[in-house]
Image 1 (cartoon, rainbow, N blue to C red):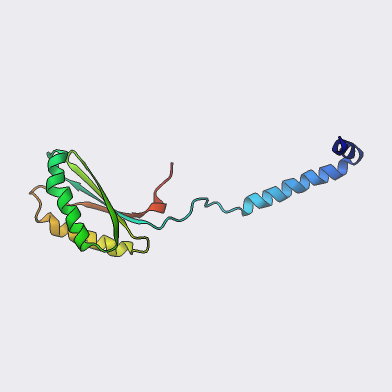
Image 2: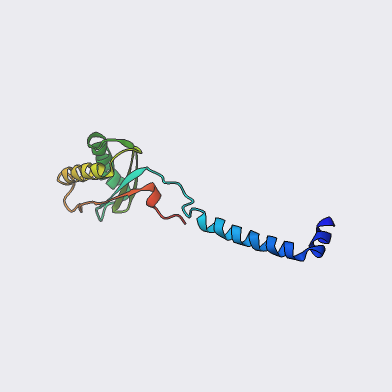
Length: 140
């Protein structure tokens, strides 16, 4: 109850205190950095192969497994590879070491894909190669 007595005896002090809190809080909010998520330096190269008319099991045996073996021998600084095979579509994600060069890895993946394209069944479309970093992926 003592704070109420002081507020009633000295109302201007509390008005000035409230204005001071309002001004200081607005300055602090404006100076707070807006990037609340840290920079994640995991470079990723995603490769999408299309071959229509082939079921996932057959596409995995003819394309996905062969492509993963080629990647492990020709691309440097691979941390791990994830692949998903759908009906007529193969998605391969190549996760690189944190300090790996994304441009070099993209060139190596492109060279491996072009070399393998000649050995694949006729009608296989050239792959779509996309490189990105884990910090550039939108967060929902």
